[in-house]
Image (cartoon, rainbow, N blue to C red):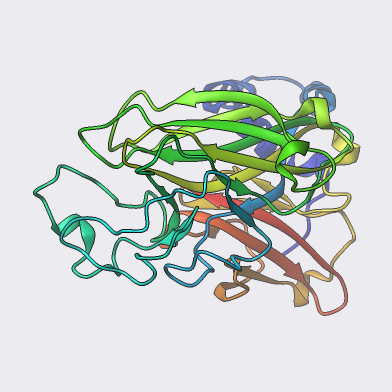
Length: 331
């Protein structure tokens, strides 16, 4: 396979950004070759948005039902009153411990918790099997903190923090939580609140986004504090921090692979820096966040990942001498 320069790949990039009809009309137009090339170059010089993943965790790599030593996360029960019982008619490890947050796998309770239909609840994960769960307190409002590892934010681009939340009980939709940032350490007094939310519906995963541009160039800790008062439980999953940058054609793939579309449903393509790789030896490897290889490819125009589960994956390209990587979000 021959490598394409950034300019040769521009029609595909343009297709991704301006849509099918616009590209078809461009191709079908009976323009002189020089005018067509000039138009493509002009369009190529306009800015294209690319998303870089700064940090992500879907909690799939941690052991089921642990409530301490969860990677580099900090889990704090400020109230000291989190419920130390399980849920009706099911059992699971550590259910009797006084926990703040626990890595919960609804498929591995006994019996699987969603097989119990008496209580109108839904503990199913949206992606994968696991998430973080905090239970209600019998003795006043919850003050249970889920604090991320330290995250180094870039100095430029649009910085976004995204995560998903679910209130699992059909009887209690209004679970509440606060969203906070610290630029120093994980001491609770170091955090500044940037948002306070109440889940408007029950039994559905909801996506929340928060702007981190005020913290550009800083190292931060991000926290979610469960604050409900004697309600039921809060589920949190798919913790993601991204940087959206505007890149001209000369900026594409200077450090990471340029992968599009991203997020991806079925197929994606890669734009390689011209002259970077020996095409005859190029191999593509896709791994999950635990490092397990899930797919291998020889170099080709498109890479099909329709059989992969939803989540974040690492894409690595190497010819044995040079290596570059990027990340995809599989929808």
